Length: 302
Image 1 (tube, one colour):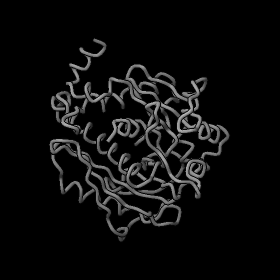
Image 2 (tube, one colour):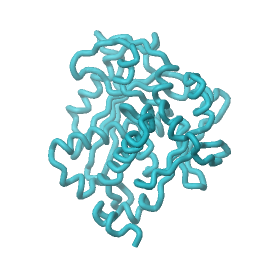
Image 3 (cartoon, helix red, strand yellow):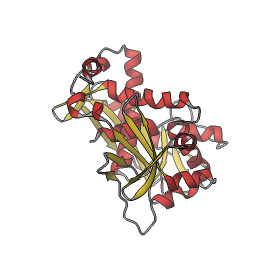
Image 4 (cartoon, helix red, strand yellow):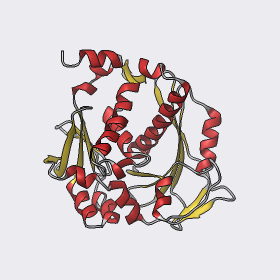
């Protein structure tokens, strides 16, 4: 799994995700730096796989709980994007401030809803564990995905419970629960509004940015030097978002007669189904990632 996938997931999943990547100037850039650095600092490359770094191991229990939760969210984004052809995941909490009302009790609601390339809705619950796979946590995740019956009148095409854990290397486990629970609820939302929020703020980021041709498409790209990550956005996505037509973005990126393609580019970008491209500099190479976080800091540039 390319590290680009984990970085893309880190900066686009959950709340606020892409929604506020650049909305508040430097504060928003800082959010990308923090999310990206979490991946960089907590993982270490070992024999072709990724395990916990010494920094991760040194965290106290509260910090490990936060780190494992974040790894769970990343796992959901990667699995849905790469395996289930679902480029967009929205944290359920994103819907509430937008006037979309629903009420689930306590911890029963799933983390995420999403939209796949076919226009279908999906539901996901993500769990993370700092050590091995936890079966009770997976059972709880399965039950949480069953708490939504329909989204905009349609049953979700998929309900997936996902767990990220280390045994000792990073692994993702998933299962697909069956039908909705007996007392599951129905929710209504507006695709245009949700998509608008998913991409809001990135317009500011790409204002005056460099234009690059990637896989025959134009992207506005910006390098965040602090973490060695370059983020790109398809200019067509930017245009639709700018003119209040965010609901048309899925059709732009995934027309019915087009082959869905994403993947690597000779310029070292990896392009994703949501129109975002990610490139990493040599700080993210296997040789550097095999070092401890402290050694990376001390040795880079020598």
